[in-house]
Image (cartoon, rainbow, N blue to C red; front, side):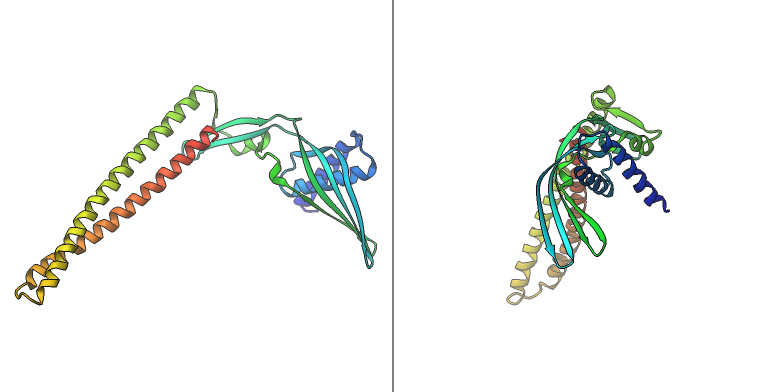
Length: 256
């Protein structure tokens, strides 16, 4: 038996043990086990069905197959505290977290379970809205992922210091981007003037002789200005991306 299959079997065994203590009949327990398996498949195994009601049941027979579709309303119980990771600093090995949900908290979930029977076989297909469930990291996974890191709580002095640090970096980036944008506009004005001068010389070249040298000089001024404008625009855009990243980091830290 592979490790992955072994984990799945253990998960189903624990789910079955959990359901024994619930006030569900055998049919409801079978559907609850199918939902638990679907949650495991979606990396949401820290949620388990605590109770379940069948809201609708429909049977459809097609040839040798019989399909029974159940619409169920399930109450899921959180098996382990769920942590929300607000901010991760891989370089400084700092992580900001809070306990998003405590073990035992419950959420309601609507799901559909199809039981397909035929030719001596039975298969179950479960459809559920996993987006309706809060996600996070269970305590054990969090401790393994961030072992040795500085863990910062959102209401601590360290959190306030980090928020001030990120705000300062954002302000510096905004200032640098504004300066880069100003420099770009200056170069663009110079470029427009140089192009206008070259256009006038080219227009008068047919009527007035001896403009070859001024035209060549004007052309030589245009090319470096184009290169400067392109380089400055790339620098401004890079700073814009930096600003966006720092805004996102600060918003994530604040839970926005």
